[in-house]
Length: 113
Length: 115
Image 1 (cartoon, chains in turn green, cyan):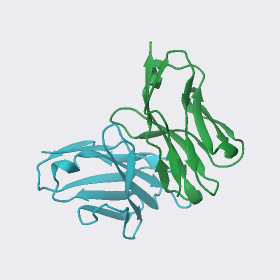
Image 2 (cartoon, helix red, strand yellow):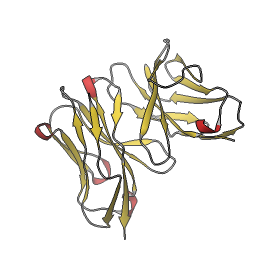
Image 3 (cartoon, one colour):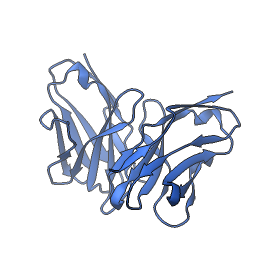
């Protein structure tokens, strides 16, 4: 069965430090991959996505992610955390290339001054 | 582009009443709309998928008689929570996708509180 795994519900990072959020999926077919950010009481905002082509994708707010097929991973990184990065982050996968999404459980990122 | 709105943003209703939430795609035609429910500190749970002009497809465990979904036009879908109970209190989020598109655009969500 297809699934999306995000480990570590809460992630604390110091301001200026590397942000690393891990996402792994299980699928027998190439998926489309997404990272979304959610601020309190708001909907989801797309950070970045991978469909085809270059496996390193850059998104908004300085985030990037790399699709590694051999590791079935799509980890999200940002070199230097900012206070405004404090939010909930969701990895999502579209299996079979259709528009139906499966979400990971999310990571609550806390940025420590 | 690709803006999705929801109305209302917050609603409080009494137990036993019904409440309707609207989801609109403002600048594109949404052939498919999705309704999600999100509990505090949890991920999004897909409730149903609706295609314009067709009956919605509900996920397992979602009561279709309780959560009525209508997708009568390419820019509007509605979710009606019938005979609401306190356990229906939640954050409801819709999303929309265009014809042949794999990407969903999300609305800002509606906070429902049933007293």
